[in-house]
Length: 278
Image 1 (cartoon, rainbow, N blue to C red):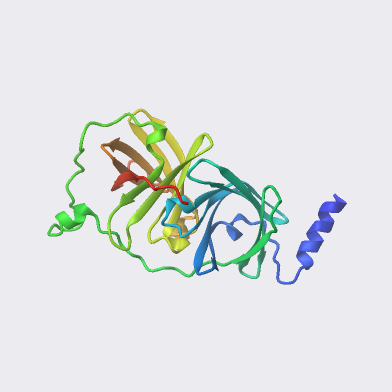
Image 2: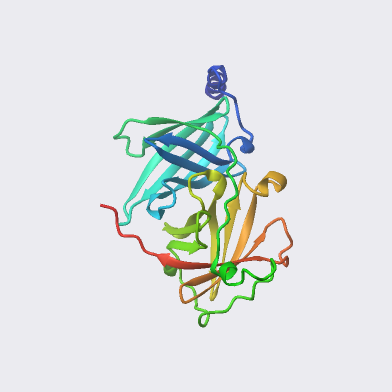
């Protein structure tokens, strides 16, 4: 107990550091620049448990890593960054962070301890402009009034979905607002992220909660501090999906709406394969 109190006093006496045990202090998107590239952390906070995503040049799914085994305590936030290359090799980094002024100061060290630690100062990005994606449906029905798009037409019979069919990159729309849905197998589960444009965490959301039941797939598009989360608090866009001939058709309903609410529909094309990096 004395050791814990001593650690608390040490943290509180450091200049500019604020004790933050409130989850809202850590949840959501954080960004730092290094070598002209944005490094983006998306932290999902449930109670004192922390998960999420980490990426650099985030439109490339080969750069997507996952935050696991995280928690918040009186000393700050602690988590592991799980990197996996195209050959399946997994590398783990330990990260520890504290809030200083309005920034998150994060110290990252390789799990094996063979490399020196690095310190990153991350900030909350300003809101980004809303950039819309253009879909084929909208291009084909541009003369129709809004919200009168024709119903989705299956390209073939519904397929029984297997977990190995989903990892990769799935695309929705064209233009600057094109949405990149990235799915990976992480241990025994599926995880991912969606972004578009992919340079700002305000346009990103982790994916989790994947459940496959025959021809039906459900998963969560997790919003911690963006979009409607400003009004409703953290929420999930719950996606109900079917698969037919490389088309993953989604019906999405926010978790703060009744389940029978009119869904927003999206048709993703994929998965796109990427060649291994040299």
